[in-house]
Length: 102
Length: 282
Picture 1 (spheres, each protein chain N blue to C red):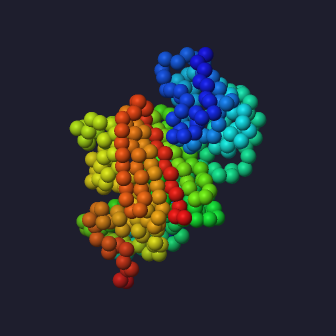
Picture 2: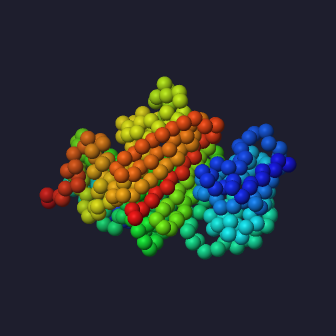
Picture 3: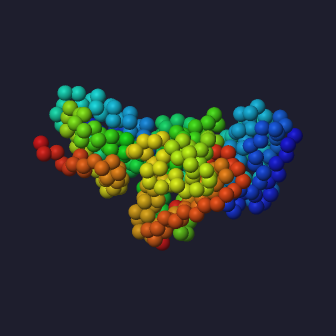
């Protein structure tokens, strides 16, 4: 399943929205083995949004609390820089940023 | 009637001129005489808007005498100061709103995270859609608005809400952002986790360090550091933030890959008042 972030906007700010979209993503991924979060068209994310949405997702995956493997696609430079900092601060592996192996 | 007279220099400088006090013991009627007011900086606009909204919320009648200088009046009109009061409470204002010009964000009241997220796309459009090197400030500006407004709404929650405004200057391209809330203040917020930080300026300075948060969550407390990291992500950008809260005032300068805070004690201020200047690489 592909979760298209651009359906919600192109710039994201708050932890509240990050938490809401993470819940929606998990809900939409029921009985899926791989979920691709498509960042096409996303221009900017704040640290708080990135940490709540991607950092939260990566933490759940690392602690084996997800029934699926998440991966991010088409992440442009600005959001990627911020996502990497969130993952580093959480001491979570960056493998969520890698392309899916299929 | 309590009369507040704003002189020509009241709204300039650091924005802390003029006796715009949030006092419970004022009479039922207040007149703000801004006829002599000169140029204003964004944080002063928020002081004026907050003063009006807070006293109105306390049940007082507030009358605003509009600036006589047409350029100053036009600027206040563009920044939507008149929206703070019903039209019959404003004297000398013709109701005209000139083109947006250098306005990035007029005075805006926020009290919920959804209101911050609703600002994100249009604000980024305004900043990045402007010709010149100021467009490169988009990512750093988005980070600052997101993190500071998020803090104001979550940690500075109060019945009056928070206020934010921003404007743009030319040569060198510069964005000026101001955010205010009448919440508990940054020192009181961080003392929920660090009660030994008695000094307000010291508590504010510490709150800007990584992993310092009043929430106690290990994932929180990165907002301020990320604002400056993003400001310096483009080489040779520079930024300055002034944080005033309770009895503390902290100035943080970020330039040449260095972030330098300095703090001192000031007269008490209710809530948190932050002004942030972001200057593009020349």
